[in-house]
Amino acid sequence: MTIDEIKAALKTKEYDFLRNDEHLGENIILLGLGGSHAYGMEHKDSDLDVRGIALNSKSGILLNNDFDQVVDTLTDTTIYSFNKIITLLSSNNPNTVELLGLKPEHYLYLSDIGKELLDNRKMFLSKICIKSFAGYSQSQLRRMENKANRLVGQAQNEEYIFKSIQNAKYDFKNRYFPHDESDVNLYIDKAVQEGYETEIFMDINLKHYPLRDWAGMWNEMKSIVSSYNKIGKRNEKAISHDKLGKHMAHLLRLYMMCIDILEKEEIITYRAKEHDLLMSIRNGELLDKNRQPILEFYDLLNEYEKKFEYAKENTSLPDKPDYKRINEFVMYVNERVVRGEI
Image 1: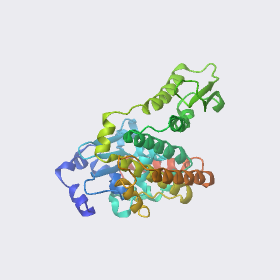
Image 2: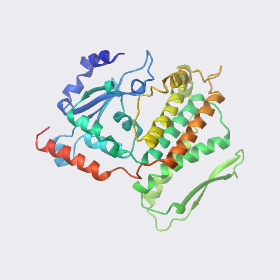
Image 3: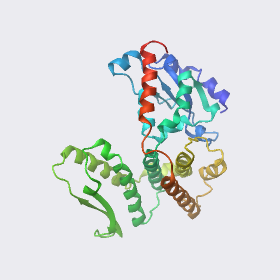
Image 4: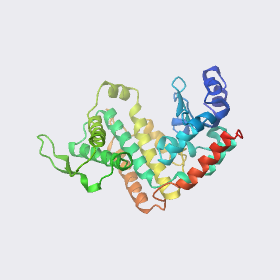
């Protein structure tokens, strides 16, 4: 679809909720493309994804009871509230950070406040993106491996699990009762379980620690381990619909975006430079006759992982977002809402 066709589609009855929902309408400050269209990886059968931001209402701000987001599954549209998107952007959430780096023509609507948000996008960028993007990349890798329904070596699979848990642990200190890193130490060693080459071991030294917080951490780690064992009919269906190439391309795209953020402090959602490479992968050119990823893909993945490692070690990004500037911007916008100025 062309941009004109997409804008015309937004005027149809199917998208009336954008105009009629109590949280949206004139409160919308930004509408943009999401998914494959935003990345420059769409084909003729790609669905249209729309993402956006809407201001919180005066009553919602004052009473702290406003909406988080409006989701329309029929059109695959998600509109975040202003306060919710600020939280997600501050955590460098890849699915929302990309909304700040679209091609200019991919913004379907921008209010003055929306433009100010884009102008101030660098205040959100920090080294937090290392863990957030790495977490998404590992999740994408798990989906790719599962959808390929291929049996990677047990030791390699254990490495994937270990990396995923380490990424999850990074945020534990923000959500659970504090403890020293050495109190819960995970590492890979020679396996004691029959049939395993290596496995993940734990050294735990917690005293007087809240049970519910430990249960929360344990359940998150358990969920990651379990996710690697869920291979079923859905994966066969994904292969038959050529979804595997899409997962492979999106995995590399995540690394590309994060490397840009770390090295250039820029959010580049539309991958013009890598378009041909990503589309060739999406179209299955790095799959063998059995629809499995070939060695060249893993060589390419390894290359980007090395670039990512170098970028994270040499980035000039701050450890945390510019919370002072972010809070001032939020107060500025919400105060104007309360005063009825916007």
